[in-house]
Image (cartoon, rainbow, N blue to C red; front, top):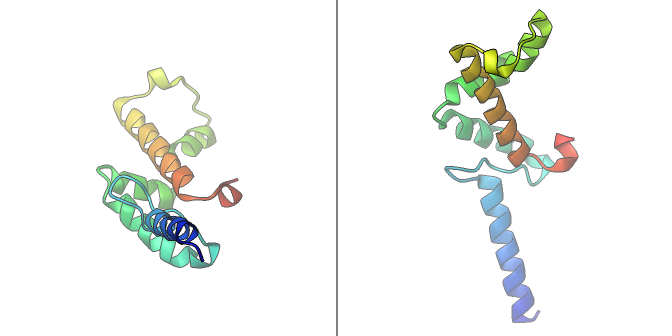
Length: 109
């Protein structure tokens, strides 16, 4: 194997490992669907460490604020949300953004 190809494969493997582990600011990525259980533990650990982690964990376990609003029939523009509703809406957006970063398109779609 030539050294350039080996270096590329080594860098690809390193990037793959870094993506699957995540960082302080980026969630772990589910690289291999067979490793879902390990990824789920790493993802939940990542969420818990975020400044609004408790709120995001609540969304994961109880459902999103948006769905609650739609189910209740309450419709009002975001600009009219109370401060608490605005925070809940932001937490919904944060957890969705983290999931979009963490899941491959084949699963997210």
